[in-house]
Picture 1 (tube, rainbow, N blue to C red):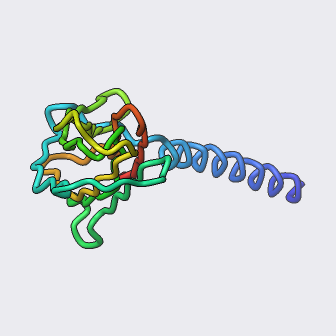
Picture 2 (picture 1 turned 180 degrees about the vertical axis):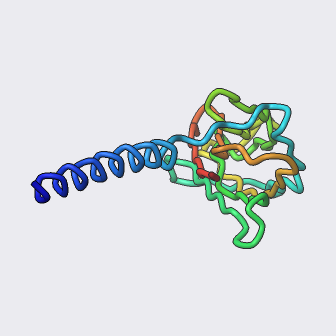
Length: 158
């Protein structure tokens, strides 16, 4: 009789532990909620495109994004932006925040600076940095928008 009571006790403890752990694991592995648009604020510290573009044989642009090792809210980015010819300037076209998915996107595009130019694909290097002064978005994305360059790179922040 005593053996049967012990089995019931152990079975009951096992069930209680399973229920308790199931509750914990559900919260531990849930996706983080994206912050609201009003909570995601930033200061664009710098955007530095090179003064001149060069001809390139590359068929894809390049984007690098890094988060400061000591200050998670500070990001740097750099890359190579491709244009139809080297006679294009590049600039930030748009910054958007997708509140539903928590993605902050910085779009860089080219503007034709001269119509008479060498016939080759142009490559302009750039660098920049920004600091989020409010909540961090879940993801930071840099996007190139050009006739010859649609490169996109993302960095998950949270």
